Length: 41
Image (cartoon, rainbow, N blue to C red; front, side, top):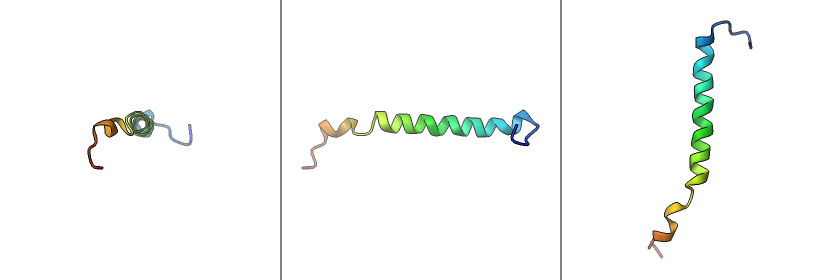
């Protein structure tokens, strides 16, 4: 698979991809959650 024989080498790549997907989901989900309580007008 992609010239990498050891599965333990692939594991950090998979985990980093999962972390990026989670961070993007979390950022989109909670983008402007506190805007209703913001009093900086």
